[in-house]
Length: 370
Image 1 (tube, rainbow, N blue to C red):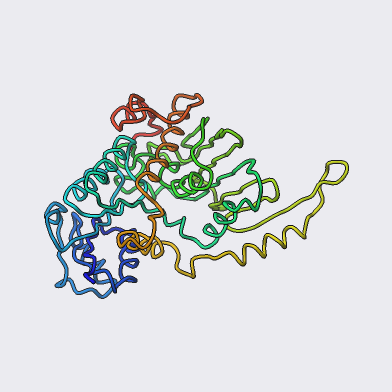
Image 2: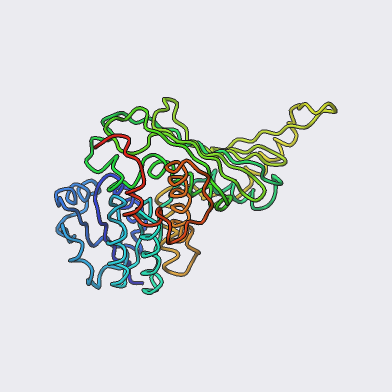
């Protein structure tokens, strides 16, 4: 079997995870090229994994790789503002593309990428490695089975702490280059999982602010209420929480279930107050323990394995371009609601100011000047 030729575009911190994933699949992958404006970073990445740079193409211009027959798969590990152009160029030249999160810096760009993918017949994958965690995989299967009954409400907490120096990097904290703040760049994984579990809401009402990062244009905290036909959800985001946590909590008919995994059950007394339901908790814990997981292969390695399996027709692609677009659909609806201070109905149309990057940039507030 011919091995897939791999090129990695952008060799910053996140590229190390991609390279590890491909190296774990050595039997069907061959690292062909690394690209960065500063080629010494390519050499640093190769050296970190004992790859001889003589065996690689190292370039500062991705366009030199477009027509190479020995490249089949391209990982794009660059800031969001660079994703669309580069992804479309490689797709148009018959390459399969795996793009880092978030997918793009506008819904219009996401649609351009999906259009290029459909025309090329190649596979466009979105990085969402949080889906590939054992606890998430198991809870997803259990919820799909109907074990917990009707879903009433979902809580999403994306709580991080970042100091001022985090935004010293030139492109971070700018609407133009980073595309947004913690809603887009930190909560993107939780929002993707919310969509995966529950789907897109009908309406969203949001507020956001920048309370602690004077060297950033974008938000560093926010809250959103989502309305579904028969349930609600709440999204909380922050870069100012000194007790960081990333979690989803599902309030269901028969249990309250959390990711990371926990389960709590109550039963009603005759007066309507509650008492513990330890028997149900034991039942759900047993079900969780017996539900098939990912066999220890999690995160980037598991996602890259799934991507390569999809290329070979062995499995369905778990995170598609359409999934990446859905995540942006909700994120830009949140930004619209918080900016205009109004409830927003989904989906956003192509004539909406928050559909295109140029008009989006004209609308959003600059909390500070970068």
